Image (cartoon, rainbow, N blue to C red):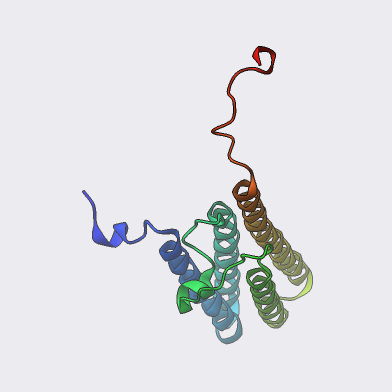
Length: 176
């Protein structure tokens, strides 16, 4: 039995938009809970929502590693949202990698500033290390995605420029 709402999630780009939407909602709610909800409920809500966002971010980044090939339908969330024709035909996808680094920097800064307002003492130190670790892991995976796309492009170019050996003499060298 195929359900229309589940079937629409078969494409990686659609799934990616859904996961990005969930991450935006959970991160915004983490910041709002941290800044505007007082007491233990605000603290627990902030930490829980921030952890959920970080887990989704890392899991989705790793899941994205399999969707960087030259024929992949997904070229990043910006290109999915605005339907640009931007690609990385000339090698390393610096635009996508740059946007990812800017996003990592912005999210890390907001998470750290909010953590500084909400947390204190040893818990703040743990939060700084955790947020930094998520940022580093995400940056590494983003670099691997961009590097994998560049490698696939180089392999495709090499195969396209290689001579066609299908018509070559198929006899072993010793028999010639």
